[in-house]
Length: 148
Image (tube, rainbow, N blue to C red):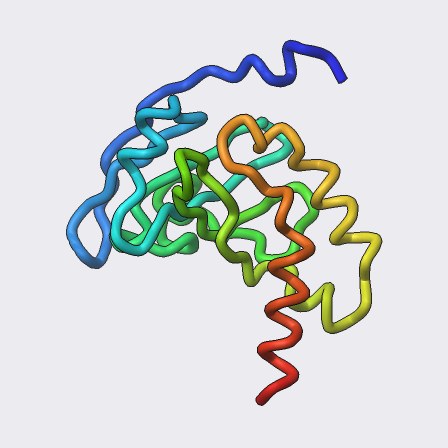
């Protein structure tokens, strides 16, 4: 991989209106902005592999679908190997993936190739959010679902 793929611009995007008031959205945030976005419920994110942009905000303030609709004027693609959304949290000074419901359909349908493609596509996100535990999260989610 080329180094320039990882040299992404950090920027404050805007404050958008939500059902709960408003929320600050950051694109490719600095470490400080990422930590500041972490609230009681963590950080929500949407990553766009085509543009290599990571949108983050305080998880309590808005959901993924409302933010994407406000930003792009269209619905968030729910099952797409070039879009990735979920929740992250800070642990021990690192920001790590906490959960993603996006790939549940692929897990149920045994479409491991799509999960692997998503994981491969979003390695650039590790600069911001450590996604190395994606498979562990999916296994836990499957176990929890099997209990019901």
